Amino acid sequence: MVPMRRLARARLLRVPRWGGPTGADGDPAAPARWEVVTVDRPPEQVLPDGRWPEPLRRLDGAVEVRVRPAPGDRGTELAARPLAGRTPPTGLAAHLVGDDPGLLVRRTLRQVKQRVEAGEVLRADRSALDRPGARG
Amino acid sequence: MRALCWAAAGELAVREVPDPELRNERDVIVQVRRSATCGADLPLLAGRHPLLRAGDVLGAEFLGEVVEVGPAVRRHRAGDRVVVGASVACGGCWYCRQGLHSCCDNAHADPASADPDWARADGGCFGRPRAAGGFAGGHAEYVRVPYADVSAFRVPDAVDDDRAVFAADAAPTGWLAAELGAVRPGDVVAIWGAGAVGQLTARAAELRGAARVLIVDRHEERLRMAERHSGAEPLDYRRTDVAAELSDRSGGRGPDVCVVAVGTPPARSALDRFGGQYADRPDALREAVHACRKGGVVVVLGGTDGFVDAFPLGTMTERRLTLRGARRPDLRDVPMLLDRMARDELRTEHLATHRLPLAQGPQGYALFRDRADGCVRAVFTP
Image 1 (cartoon, one colour):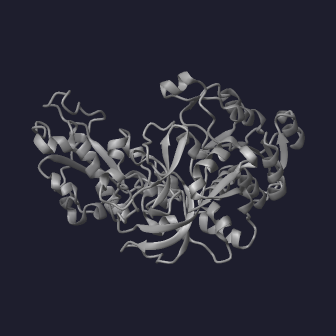
Image 2: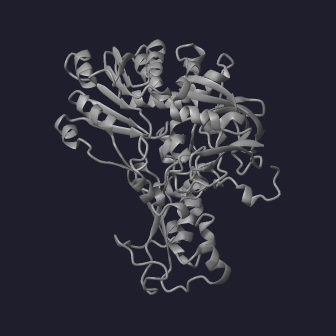
Image 3: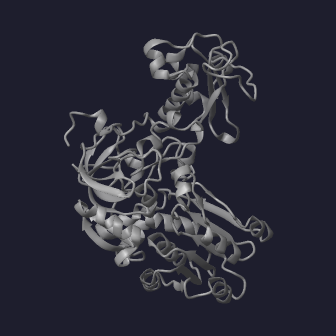
């Protein structure tokens, strides 16, 4: 187990059963809904030295994170949500993320899970349209 | 390279497509030696998958030779002859560690964008649309295989290509059905569907000690094949009162285990197709539930894209039946099945009723879809 003083860097918060609305059609001041994933490893492997793992670390300052051991030796429940009151992304960032900041959080959590469990983030095949210069 | 691609509803074409590339460190590239048609491809062929795009390469069951290896691959090297499980699986998530590879959490390349219920996304599979988590299939000259140390298995020298190719999907699916049914020595097992999976379920039940295996279909040549190669007793439902026969042949108890391996039924009507929902008619499933002995197990394989109605729930609860299901097999049984193939306990090559060059892939699928010319499986060589 990771000592609590280390985990304290990841903000431990109470989670309502139902989160507030997310995205452009909700109250921007309301807390966003938590996105959560179970990683099949103990907390000390999910957060080595108590630090947020990559690529979650890149969202430092934009999200809050909750970590707790999963029941039944199922590993670690890792949750994150956009910080309330943050300005939605604009420009290229908005284009990439869309109007649902939860999407970026979900994708990031999943990448954390894949890195820890599988050792890499699985990439899709590239289609012919993605590879105009490819043979064939 | 050349590959068999989906072109439009009901239409396949062999096209030139870009060669696959290593996309992850755990990938290998396999040069395909054999690939087989699969019943799960038929809804795709018919255009019933909303995420399918023209140019997607089909084929979930294939075998070949490793020609390129990612830097994190430990178990394979160039030149290995491997069969590749139809399910893509990471080997490191909770599901994989339980042996449930078809439920792998990390084999869908982008579930966050494709599936709002992302934490429960299906695992990956070859020959399925990329947006549905799939990877280019094996009806091609080359295939990229992610997580190769988990998904690819070296084929023993004693097992030839025509036999080993079915260790990718059909044989492990049949074994899984017998396992889900907990078939025990002395059991009576009834199977609906005498295609490749049904026949291999019959053989798996026999290997697990079933006293009697009954197989239900309407295609005479499939029933004869099941009788000859799997020791199953054929029941032609066009000429037989199946319920009465099953009761008679199980001493009035009903079969201990009933397996429904009939594949995906066609959509019910043009309106269903237009609406995108497929209210399947679970005729075989209903018959299985009614036939099964009290406290028995009904196993459903693949079977439906969406919903079924008129399910005899009352019978299920009244008789305390257990209903279990699976769409794709796990990977854990593949080495054991290859060993059984090497010992001649499990023979599968007879299922390849039509061996064709990949260039004749569209014709092979037409034969397979229509059950024409006694086709059980068409197997392609690039």
